[in-house]
Length: 477
Ligand code: ADP
Image 1 (cartoon, rainbow, N blue to C red):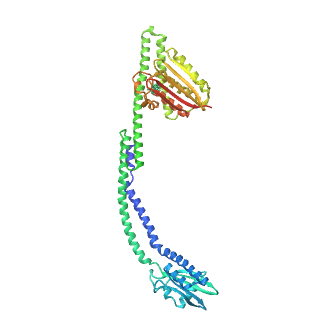
Image 2: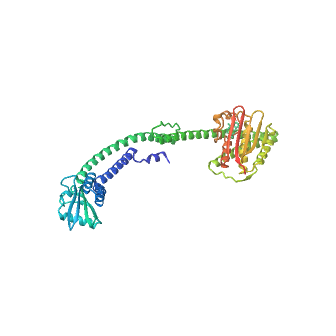
Image 3: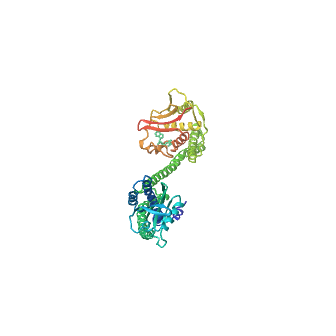
């Protein structure tokens, strides 16, 4: 994706998005409040009042059934429920008041009570299993007027009693207009608040986000000097750190690529110069066509081809194209044979390759060719970098089902700050870069890839001036 394409994909600014989300949230809350306070309030109030009156009606009922003081019970019920109470004994179609308790003059229960009304309520209660509750009025009152009435019929000693509770209903009309005005005011305040909040939050977030964006854009065009000052949002700080890390890694990889080109050019030029130089000499001076000179050409060609196959090997691993042919390998025998082969080859040059073992003989599952290649790379480095005694030691030990192979040399060692980098592609230590030691900086990268594919652990211990020990561990069977 091109930088210009990234820029085209812009959405709404965070501030506006935040504002709309907060405003929508406020409106939602206000709508819920309005429904509860205005639309459902009357119903809520009525059911809560009816439940309360029924509870106190039960106290009077108990007083009647226990032949207790019904007047006192009615008085207590009225006081506790805040409703007017009347208790009627119903005989021969007419009601006789046996107890009366009022909290408010002029209430429905108080003023009822023409026999016709009483009969109407009595028959409503009878038709509803002895209990009636609801809003009741003369029919002329406004929405705010009227009463909530509870009528319970009980029978005791062959006599019917009707317990009447009445209280004023909730003034819905007045309340709803008050609440509506309040809610409108709250809505306006909340929406202004949402706007202010959106600005504050977006400042806190958008400033670092746009800073991160411009740093990322600079990184995209190859400027690695990413800088991000931390902010109050943890996730953004983590993103900033990741960006800085990515920039550092990209810069390192870029530097290593450039070093590779320099290394490879240098490493290719040396054998090519030798090959062309020796070939010309042999062409021009017939006496120079000697086995030694031909050997130089053969050796240098081999170096060239090794270099090329190293590069191929690494690019294969990079493209995840390296495939292992797994099989059980007698690892001890394979390591011993490799050391012997190498030792014989290098004996003439004065090198001593030692094989030391704890006497065990291990078998592991792996790709023999690849594991031998990893071992050869380590031995090769050992030989290249070992000290004046020219000794390289390969050690094998088995412990708890793990076979450990070590390759030690007695060279200058590797400084601690370079121990991690040496496994990277194209890395060549500062000290060795200009010393003409053949190498592409790919050997350890190949070792690392092979060992990772085998699930092996590996590492290096090194002391400057004493030598280095490269090791890897594979599981035995
Ligand atoms: P090269 O082909 O340059 O040896 P490697 O990937 O094998 O590449 O090694 C990378 C670098 O690690 C080497 O250039 C060298 O600086 C350092 N190195 C590797 N092995 C040793 C060793 N045994 N002793 C000291 N330095 C080593």
